[in-house]
Image (cartoon, rainbow, N blue to C red; front, top):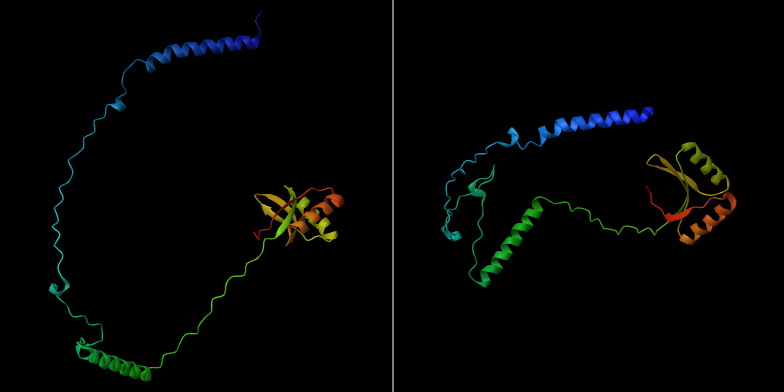
Length: 199
């Protein structure tokens, strides 16, 4: 007598062969699906009018429109004459200095306080000792308390639902490595010295 699992496997294999014999000829009969018989008609591009670009003209030939701001009248506008000799330039300089002196007398302007830019303070690299990583917050808290009781500056940081326990930071890497050896002797914990980051 044939084992039951073998019987089920033979029946399953027979069903697969029969379904393949029925379905494969329908799929591979060589007929093109109706979805692929789509004709695409592209229309001709639209006719855009051609734009004639005018040739470059000198500034003197362009029309000049008078510009008046709101509240200003044409009587208040003072034109500066174009100087033709060095003596006229000196006279214009003197006239403009007289005008600026009158403006300063009329409305005194407060000068803004000068703010000196100071260079940012560069903080040297600091080093910290990563002692352990826990999935449980309670375990991390217990280790931090144990390290604080032994006079180590310990803290924990949560990253990606993991609780990392650190000791430090120290300004010199050698101090962090010395701390690592002390913690290894006292608590049998091997840590790694990494750069300290505020985050």
